[in-house]
Length: 146
Image (tube, rainbow, N blue to C red; front, side, top):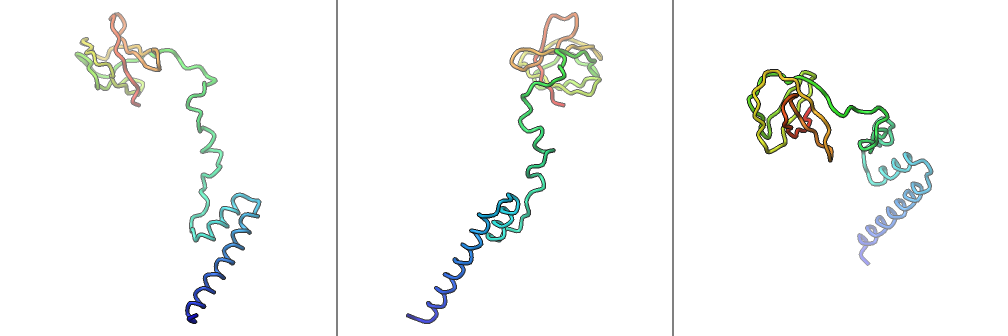
């Protein structure tokens, strides 16, 4: 056998034995963070464990979007539209005096000339919302943008 092959095979074998010993040490580590750092050192990863890993602030609200709130939300709001309009069509944005911005999602044009009108936005079925002007017997479907 050629001498350089013998040297190369010896180096490869010795590095595998060293890596397995280190890997076994990582496996035997009880602390999760220390075990992760051990694995990172074996595989030459320079990253430190994320500061958000397991933090209460990031995980407290996870998945709570669909949970019912303990404080009931209103079924409707009354507000004033800022500005004038002659009609509302799909895609128009409506700015309210309380800072909310709503967008018309209905494909029907809502013809009504008004200047800073008072409006009522109420919940509808399937999570949608309806905008109506008091005294006008027509509603338009809207969604909240901001």
